[in-house]
Figure 1 (cartoon, rainbow, N blue to C red):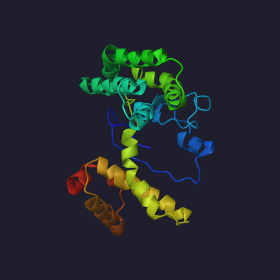
Figure 2: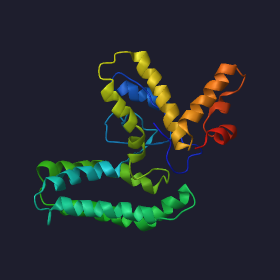
Figure 3: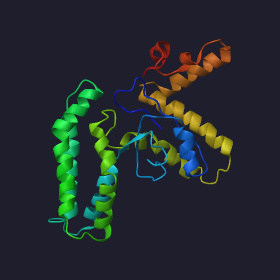
Figure 4: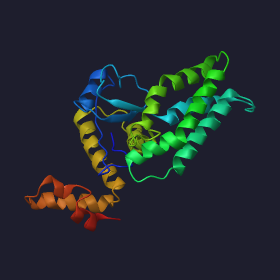
Length: 243
């Protein structure tokens, strides 16, 4: 889990270990939270199970299904998938052009400048006659998550894609391959703690070695300091540990 890149007071990443992807694990993460969540299409993030949550939908995941079709084509011209990718690319392009000062203004700008391109994409999908195989799957996926995607017109904090979280988990996925035969649950939980500290520190512009050296030195001295003294956005931490 991580905070959004925009409009968050602090950049925070939290890694959590569980032995499976069962529904109850999502429940433990969500708890009594009543805000918004940007996630992929995993069905455990259910609107029926958690009606108090507003979900966003990752436009990159929607685009990916069409991109896979385009890659498999020997000659892509004239393909419905090619046109779908072009329309989706334009949505991302227009999003980058938006200028705003806060989340509320971003919502207004999205309605004014972005909505027509999103509508054009979905109108195009309705014109595809009897899609089959992979194209049918891509169209159905896009339409399934259209209501969630359109929450960007209500909540400015919702990004267009889930890429920021995928970027911060890349390190852990590489390590996971090297830990294939590890069986220690306590070790996995401990790794989650250190991943959380490392990635949060990186997002806040800290030198990781300096940061760990500093917080361990405080622990070694047994100084009676509050947790806030260890956090990456603490003024003294930033002064000592910034790259």
